[in-house]
Length: 403
Image (tube, rainbow, N blue to C red; front, side, top):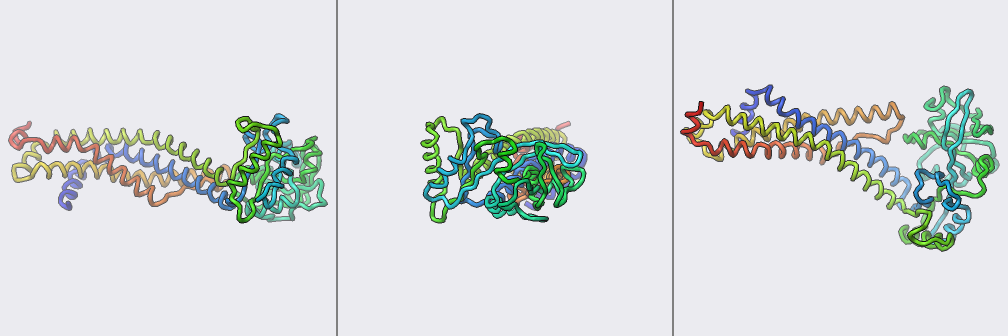
């Protein structure tokens, strides 16, 4: 095998320019595949970490078909405090938190913006901080006696949203009402969470003239109960209370595990589509290798005749050409992995700098590297089978007479 490898390597080395041009299709395809899969895997890992932090004993309830909490427009779709009470009394529920999320016009100094504002009770705010791993990096959390007080996300205090950093004691206007900043949260890495504003729930209802609404309900399942069974009970009781049929219910109840599975399924489809598109380059690269090997057979007909004349078998000629095509694929794959690594890390750095998020992180697991190398080698080898078979079938006398 060593002799086959050295002979194949030397043959490719003699045709450097052609070998490099042949590998272009392979390393472009592999680079695209590695970069896309690494970014998709990195994003999936970040989301899985967040769900792991949330815990598998949580249930999320929100209006059906919402783009984000608080986007339900019809009164028949919204969740209310009465729904929250129904959920609270379900067996197996340890505690329930309700959040009111709305978009509002905000103003700081002479700047204006449209931001998400979350109305939350101090008790629920403490639970949210504990679950999400947030920290109040400056100031304090909301208190029961607070009314027109506000805790701002990291982006408000870092200059990402406003030209000047917000400080404790300064005032933000929400729908022309003044809110005094009492706390600034630590960085999450998610632009939405880092840009959100937290105010007392009753104050937000009063400000936006909201009578009774819960944008999202978060449930913690008591120890010893199956979250899936509790979720099914909650769903059934809410349907009965709201007088809705199973196929027409206006709300959605999901465990954190179900939500994670939904995200994983979406990522799986997206990655399959992206890899399929990138694989077109690999097909083109394989055709390039096949074309190069066919050309090599024609150019080296006399050489093949000489090899057979001195005792080389058909299998020897076949293996030499297969090693050559496999090497083209393997080296092209190795270069593609290096380029893909650079592209993935560049996208990660660009997302961090432009969006201020660390959710998009390129991940390069060992199976991705080894899989890309193996795949490129297989593509190269398969592309060389037909040319190699043609070379192996040449008769020594005919090959030596070839002009």
